Image (cartoon, rainbow, N blue to C red):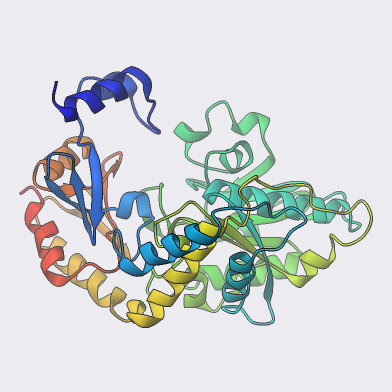
Length: 404
């Protein structure tokens, strides 16, 4: 038995993949990925694939970027992990300071967790607990948008609006009131407004909904509304953070400062699991005192390896002037894709692109894989979201692989 078959057989016998029809999965032999370099992934047989969706929207600077590798290696030789409970950490302190520096005088506190779902859980739980211990016990609800996706833990799933991801969960989670558009907020019953603790949104563009951009200026209007009504604004920048929109954070495109900013995916450049939730000093101060602690945390909170990788990633943004070419690269891909007959309703923000195809997104992506490009569809929407480091030649390779 050759090695690829050995690994596939072990996978089919024992592994369980996320968002995957396992019966269908067991009928196919997928690539066994062994290493990465730049925008490329290589399987155990040496075939290479362009990472067309940044390994589910995580990779920023390319795989195995030498600065990230060095930072992880040097940190591992010193300390891989130590509890963040009752102890401080060099790298976590530096990273918290660096992230808050993007929002001086506003988002001044940082709470670490492990992934996008938990970054949202932190914001939701903090908002609700803050209300309960600061004289606003009637505010127990969350306003969320239809077709939203905020993660898969119970709280995050219950505020989602994509039915196939919340079946069986929405009814047992948080108290949620869903709206479709900004106009819906203007017509909310007063009882909903007065009982809402927070409103949650993916800024500028919804991802799992099929890459659907919000109207320009919508985020700024939402911030004004939430402040007027005394409702916390939670921005889910798990997908849009760290340069995807052309700005470091999507909220900066409209000059919006939320009450909570949730970060993950690109935080470490796509190298390590790590999440962060930033919040205002007002929120932080509301947790001081006996019996008011935020009782939430993870064993690997403030992980030293993840924090070291995140600091290295932020340094690469400066060293390589990463943000300067994001819009140009996105416009080039959009322009070239728009010339293809199979592309329907192309949608783009920065270097995040979605377009619809007829005949099935799964089959379209199978053909792409055979031609050396990896991505995953959202039903019949094809997502193109490569690492920000992608070159013009690599973009042309991606475009040439597209079925006619």
